[in-house]
Length: 281
Ligand code: HBI
Ligand code: FE
Image 1 (cartoon, rainbow, N blue to C red):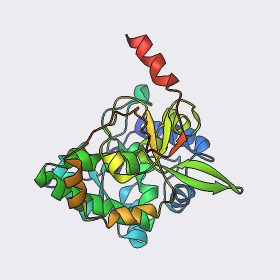
Image 2 (tube, rainbow, N blue to C red):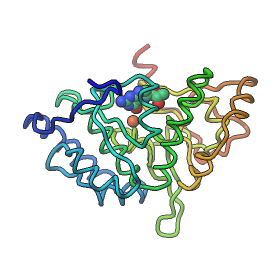
Image 3 (tube, rainbow, N blue to C red):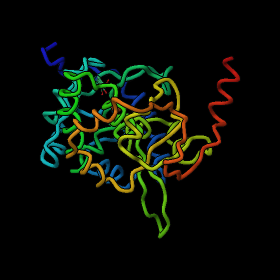
């Protein structure tokens, strides 16, 4: 492994079983996403060599991705240290796990694998706005880490790049669509995020989000919704220093909180998480 934690993808080492898992995941997700994923995600996917055939070859992805937005995918063994992760993003390299989950764990995994990273993230990296935004996150991450503000900054990434929803006009009516990779790569959460009555859907507001904890072990209780992906452009240019200063004072919020100041697009019933607590209690 190199100092930047990259490894060769070794595409030829994937087994028939690995490619079969990819095919299963790809096919069920591709059948599900029309009407759930945003137009930019669908468009990015359409131009990339990502198909049911098998795990994509990163070199082939990069032949399309790099000329489009300057991004490239590099292989890593799994989660990498924050600093290494940010250094890659700041240089428009997206670290992707090179392994794929087992056939016995299609819906749950602790570490991002090649399906989450490539199917979930790479289509949005074809979009110039997201391309700039994630590079900025890498740069801001390096600074945040030095000044002890990573917890706050990581919430921005979580509620946008991983679990973001965006408004979209569909047949003259406003609809909510997925752009976050954590949702787009999840069979169960993609339907839940857009269609379930359970979660709150709240207009995205930077400081509000940076005060809000998130759950990593279950569906989100709240999603934050952008008016447009172009809103990320403003976020990419923000000077976080005064924001961090304000965050030193005032409250922090739990994932299911709704505030009087929120723009509530849908007030969730909370039914999903109620049922789950009841079962596990
Ligand atoms: N490493 N490979 C990988 N993928 C991630 O998404 C990732 C990571 N290391 C750290 C990290 N994410 C997050 O904890 C940061 O965004 C804070
Ligand atoms: Fe991710």
